[in-house]
Amino acid sequence: MKKVTILGSTGSIGVSALDVIEKNPDRFQVVALAAGRNITLLHKQIEKFRPEIVAVADYKRACKLRDLLPAKLKIKIVGDKEGLNEVASFSAANIVISAISGAAGLIPTLTAIDAGKEIALANKETMVMAGEIVTKNARKRGIKILPIDSEHSAIFQCLQGQKRKHLHRIILTASGGPFLNYSREKIATVRLADALWHPNWKMGKKITIDSSSMMNKGLEVIEARWLFNLDIQKIDVLIHPQSVVHSMVEFIDGSVIAQMGIPDMRTPIAYALTYPERINNNLPYLDLLKIKNLEFRKPDMNKFPCLRLAYEAAICGGTMPVVLNAANEVAVEAFIRKKINFIDLPGIIDRVMNSHKSSDASCLDDILQVDEWARQNTNNIIERNIS
Ligand code: MG
Image 1: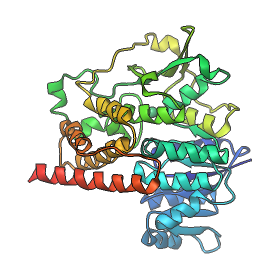
Image 2: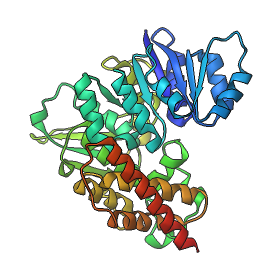
Image 3: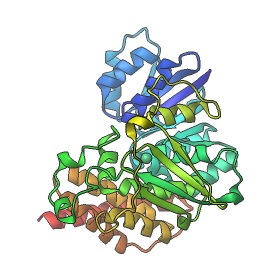
């Protein structure tokens, strides 16, 4: 029986993970949950899965949740960042699903690694910000980091049984998002609702907007760089609108191995939880006869400058990806609040990156300081733009 902690249980990945767990009660048991603000859903999850400890965003919500639960249920409810870290390092768990969205996932993921937990990683920002520290700490403790992100799960699967020296490059596929066939002029007119719609995947708000701008693919390039310890030059992106090939690996002899499947996050989640085993997820099998055609195109970095910015940050290295990520998070949040337009996103991120001189990213305090600086700076640029 695998004992599982989920950080971000009420988000899209958390909900899918609980679905996998619920369908396999003989394999998994939920021991701890952490969520942010959705107390209503979290309450339902607690009643169903009976974890031993639960964390929420703050003490006020922790009190509210305590009031909702019957006193006879012996569940520890904690709040705030300390509570989140208590859940991340909870002793009974074997594996921690890191699925909090954004930079907020970094510290709890590092805490879980320090506590010796295996990590099923969905939070790519953790790797973008602190890939060097995360991989070093995991290596030191002999901990596996199992990717949940569908592209990285695909690469991970394609690499099984292969020799590292035979690897030539990896190819991350991207659906291209809702604006793939838009002209630059048309992209300039898109609204929030347009950017919140994805053709193939159902996901949370932030990642859906990142997919629309293709920043998501850029963050994934940096995530892949750390997960698979690769030079950026060995990581390519191809647009593949059908989202059937989840990614590919090319070997030195010209062989290409692709991982395919229906676009459903429960497949990579289950693989991360059961690796190296596979289980039947009771999902529909891939029907290639129905799909018929698989297309591939080169990404247009002029139409999607966020992808170019991410490559630039990755090549620059050090703390530049921290700045890229922080500026993107703040700008996306401003877009969600309708303070800026979709078309403004890359320009704002570019300006913040331009005013940063990259430095070494091997110390967590430095990373957090740069993150804070970049957020402040992005906010200033946005405020100046509005007024
Ligand atoms: Mg992905």
